[in-house]
Image (cartoon, rainbow, N blue to C red; front, side, top):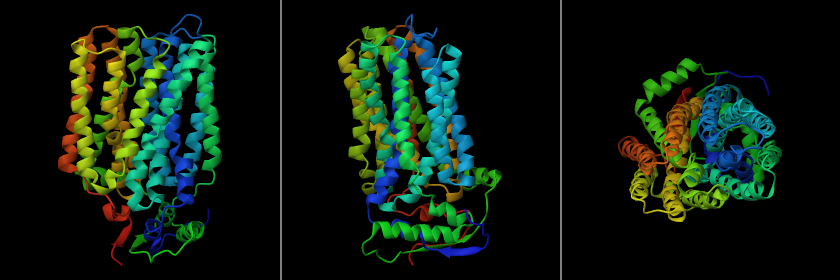
Length: 479
């Protein structure tokens, strides 16, 4: 990269990116960056579906189903939280591209090592490391996507990309069925993890062509490089482009201190910080109440061990259809009404499911149908949590903000959740599992109420208009 400048520049780079029509170049960004959520979905689902198989004699690992669904899941999430914070800080400091390449490599190596697990401690270690890489992906990828996608498409694309997690989940669920039933108990689960590595390598090959964020470049002293890069993008997109509307004047800096980032989030945007925490905690608890223990629930209450993948594939498809069909409404109806509606609506549906389950009115099929309805609504809401925190804070803090909220919210729901919920399901008492559902539902509803009061109207707006960069001398959105 060229030498760093630290002067004051006025640039139209953000406006030039926002006025671009949707093109083949944008699809390359979506495929190269967004498909990582498919990997995450594949990872989590494979482990959930394999929990009963891994606990069987002859699996090659001396581990219980509760340890897979509880301890290993919690370690995966703990790794994701720490990875998000570590790589998030590096992403804001050293750029998006360097880190979204590094984090994918970390994921690939850790997943491959998981496939060679020979003892519980090895399995736990590399589940943690896999989460470490995935957590870094969330920070690096969401920040890059939002900075490269035009503002009028940002909400829909971001939500659908985050929702693509469930394509991986559906694929993982269906893949585990033949692997569990047609292969030896100590071989099938290893191949399942190996498939994740193959998909990750394919994504890495595409990702090499994704450029650095021009927004990151001009703020961090690479203004000429940012202008040149946007010019190349405009040539690839082609067509008659309208004049860019708006400019931003920046005092360039090589880096932004961690203390200033933290001060910005807590002192300058306290309401937005509360909002981000609420959304992440809410969705983490609701999802952990269902997804981390779903195989355990089917096994404990309905004696279904080897075909759980079929049930979860239905849930996963419902999860993906939610963002796919509702995503455009976040750009048209608006962020606040859609986020609050999806959070509160999914929480209410889960409360209804908890009551039906406690009354013994559900079997494996009808419970899966209820979960599908809940998560159709919840998935769009959960995806919007990532969208929200990636667009309501200044450019210099974007990756770190995503990492912070992901880590805090997911730690609360994703570490405590699996440990508490796995224990509740393990008792075999319907009322205990219904309690797990209720906890997740109530916290999700509370987050939706917070959105009603503190939500930010960010639809159709440029990132610099929603939150001016810390280094901005002026932002002109009407020029």
